[in-house]
Amino acid sequence: MNRSELVAAAAEKTGNSQAAVNGVLDAVFEIFSAQVSKGEKVTIPGWIAVERTDRAARTGRNPQTGESIEIPAGHSVKISAGSKLKAAATGK
Image (cartoon, rainbow, N blue to C red):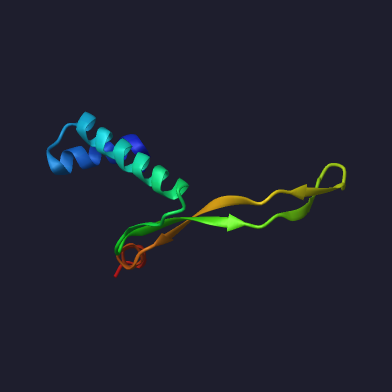
C-alpha cells in the first residue's frame, strides 16, 4: 500500500476528505521528523517506536579501488514494531 492508497482508505473509513487526511499525515510526519532530529524517541504504544541512533566513526573500503577510507560518525533511525503490529503480522 502506498501513501495515496493509505490516504484514500483512511478517508473512506473516517468519512473525512482525502485532503484532510493528507494534511494530518503531513503533520504527523513533520512531528516525527522534528522530534527524531532532536534525539527524542517517538512512540505510539502497541504500534510503533521511532528513535535516532548514533553510529561510531569507522574505517571502510572503497569497493572499486580497495582503498581504505574513514567513514565519519553519524546518525541513523531505528523503527520498532509494537505488540499490536507484531500480532497483526502473525495473524493472531
